[in-house]
Length: 605
Image 1: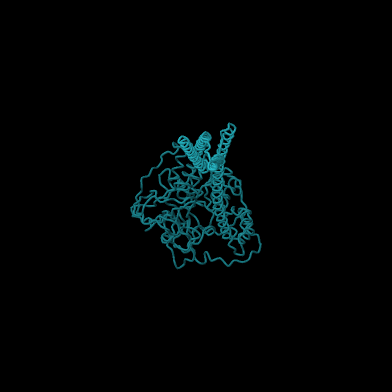
Image 2: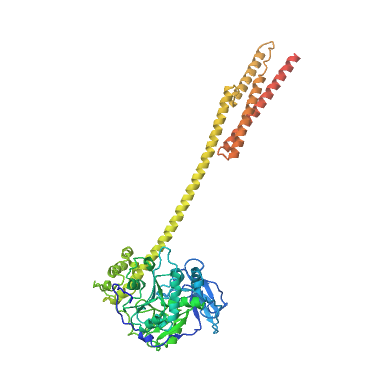
């Protein structure tokens, strides 16, 4: 006999399961419209790959996830794509999301199916890809993609594979009836998953209030090493972490997953879907759903096509509208009230409760907490619901998170036992949503800050590079200036240097001497010898000016080639030296003319 352990807390609400187990599973049929949400799982929403007006076949892929975590969506029957639009989807907020509206043609024509004869001949990645392409996601909880879940980290070997058949929540009997009537398919799917994971132990956990399911599963596992563990009936023994503790004695660490301790849980419906995908080649386009409640004339379990509206399912069960007071999707503990019956049922939908006013009456008004601690005693996660409630209500989310708010599985046990009728789970959900929003905003803020810092670093780097180039140009200009100064000093040392002031002084001196000579000539009666201009000096000055102009022109050409900062300055210097050369030439020409005139006057006398 399998050894069992217990978990803290838990409650024993009225089961109300017998109403829907008196009839075998029925086929719901094909409604007039199928509404297929693009996000029916935990992860990225699928992207539409069909167009309005296009005819599709049963099982044909109509939406796929190309990036990120997700699985495709398939047509539940053959028909025509009527619309791709926003429609209400299963969610506590009543939100709308993108859906593909399919109008069935009544032919129910399958697309080409590719079943596998012997999956043992394939590698594991091929089988995992097949499971993904079949659109299989967890059918008992948040809808985590099954192929991702069957790929645990390499450093976390799965030693125990658990098939969750506990189905502990009141009213819901979908898994119970599946195990009763389709135990072989369930076990075949479990074998496929065990072949992928290679665990040391496979065990099916079933509550002791399901004797027919226990007997059917025991017969189906004959000749295998799969264990059938019958566990005591207590809510929420079907919770993943609670079932792990019951069957292994191990506790999943706070914030962790069962794979952290070498355990993996899969749902009964998921196992059947894997079996159909592998052995029949069929994608996940249908599931078993419990339709129950006192307002239903014929409660039971129906196999529905994914995308079937709730209204069609209620009609199939014989809804007595006059008695309907409240419509609940899911169980009475973890489900939520629907505001409309037009929403579609998806891969994770397992129960519809059409309750009368006395069956699920409206909760009484919330009263102040009396600190009775019943919520703490009932909590299966050993949290402090009272403190979590105070912090959540006061929006002190950091303190609530510090008390492991996200370990809460929202089972509703605390709300169930609260004598003050405080909707504790609603406060916890509110706090979780607010924390997620704050984290998202923080991520956006961090991303914006990182972008700003990256831009600032880039601008600073560009400025440094620009400053470095400027310094290099300044250094080159300084070296050129130093070279020029050295050349000038060398010219002075050789007695060849001159400048504009010296040239002007020489010209002024010559003019004064000429004026003085003319005045002396006018004062003396006898003509005196005319002093000749200093032609040699003027020629030397012209040569020196031309040499300097050539030097400056060379420096300018070099600065232009290096794109130096002193190009304009050198251009002005070259222009000035060019003017000096012209003036020196004019002075030399004038002196030569004067000398020729003096020679002519002397010869005529």
